[in-house]
Image 1 (cartoon, rainbow, N blue to C red):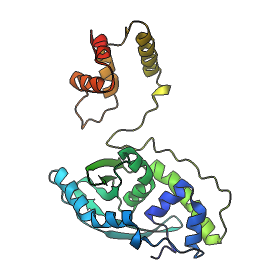
Image 2: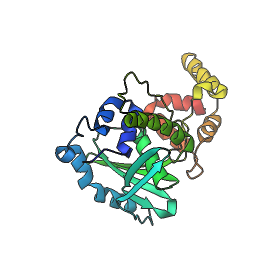
Image 3: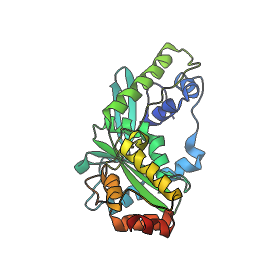
Image 4: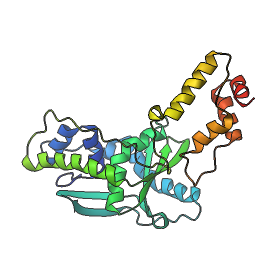
Amino acid sequence: MNRVGFIGGSDCVKIMQGNWLDLWQIKTRRKEPEDLTHNLAVQLGTITEDFNLSWFEKEHKGCILKDHQREYEKDIGNVPVRGTIDAFWSVKSSVVEAKHTNSFWKMDDVVEYYMPQIQLYAALAQANSTYLSVLFGNSDWSTRHVAFDHEYFNSMWAVVSDFWGYVKRDEEPIGIDTPNVSTNSIKVDEMVKRDASSDNMFVDAAVTYINGLENNKTFEWTLTEVLAEINRDRSGDWQDYDETDWKEGWNFWVEEEGYLTMIN
């Protein structure tokens, strides 16, 4: 497989993970890329892709995918880029990327791992977002909607451009510290990660809860206030998290008596 003369989606993943030297050796023809024809995981992903995308359509009423395996080739800045998207959902202006992974990987980890790739594909297709459609082993399927984030992409592309400079100069990248570009601002299913440790209101609630748990399980926050805090950043496309949801979650994760203490 020719991997020379351009940057692709999987290359972006390697670059952002800091695996520069191995990729640089491939891009400068010092090393042959891995032969994936006998890589079981890769071949399974290829074989199950059509089924994966069909299942995605089935799970999204009215969804009709097009542009299967559409190839893009362009320069972004001074970096030549190639990418092949699995499919496109025109109504949503979204790329759909199919993955098949093992049953032990969590969906959040899949999103984080492939973030550089799916942000690149959205940029190439001029899409608003990307849907990840993921098969886990032979027993589960899940999807996430990941918004295209200009700030993240620009920061990522500065790192990719830096790597490409080493390729063009034929200069071995030794001792390179890859910047850690945060993904926290990227909307996933219309929500972003929030560091509650910097939220005084939430911290006060957490301290109250812990102290209350240790002192006869009394709480200053009512259930209504807790639910309001949970729903504060919840997507408008989702129904509010209500008392029934809370009770089901509490019964699953916490002792029943704790729930009863809070609502009484």
